Length: 156
Image 1: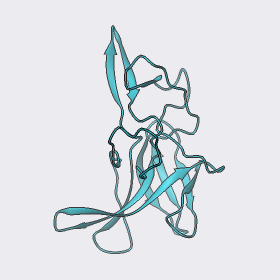
Image 2: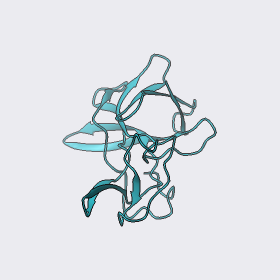
Image 3: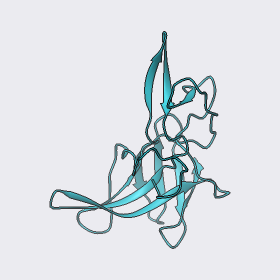
C-alpha cells in the first residue's frame, strides 16, 4: 500500500502478493501484483461474510529484487481507472460476487465496478501489463512513461 493513500490502513504495509511473478529486465528482479488487499471470511449465523478491513486498499504492480534470501521493493505502481481514481479490491457485482462487508462483518460496503482481485501479471513488449483477475476478465494496464506513476487499468 502506498503510504498515506488510505485514511485508516489498520497497520497494513503492502498487503499480500498475488500468485505470480514475471521476470523483469535484470537477474533476480521480478514484476508482481498485490492481491485485492486484506480480506477474510467471518461466520455470522449460517452466513460467511467477506470482510475488508481496509476497503480503500488500492492494488498495485510491484517490482521487487530477490537477493540473498531477502526481498526488496524497487517500485510500486498503483492501479487506477482511466479517470485517475484508485481501484480497490472490493467485489464488483451484486448477485455474482460475494457481498463486501467492513471488518466487523455487519456493516455492508458498496460494490465497486472497478474492483480487482488481482492474482497474475505478464508484461508485454510495449511495456504495459496484463493482469489476471480471479473473478473477472483480464485487465490491461498502461503505466505512464515515468514508470512510477499510476497505471491506468482497463478490462479486456
